[in-house]
Image 1 (cartoon, rainbow, N blue to C red):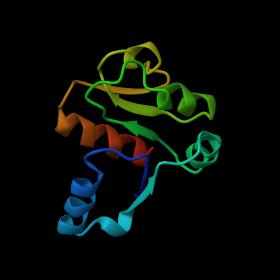
Image 2 (spheres, helix red, strand yellow):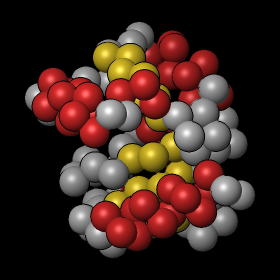
Image 3 (cartoon, rainbow, N blue to C red):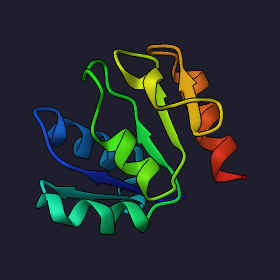
Image 4 (tube, rainbow, N blue to C red):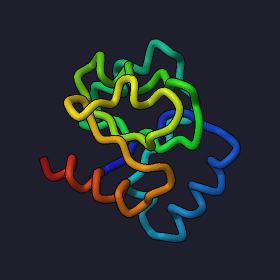
Length: 110
């Protein structure tokens, strides 16, 4: 399994350091901010859209992922339930990391 982390934010340095500490940095591609017109290309290169945000209204990446036909995994926060339905992905209870990991493994193996 490989992860593509699209975007940036105040936690990026800490997350990169944690990936280094865990020895999994090789499995994560941190793209940083990209122009909006690159998003479809990057999402088409992925098999699943993973968006475990704490809050974000209706994150644009969720419908963008659905447009390119990718299932989504998201915490059940804010507007995520409007697009992440049983037919389109998996909603996970907020901060339930065990269920998040289970959803990732389920879609990675399916």
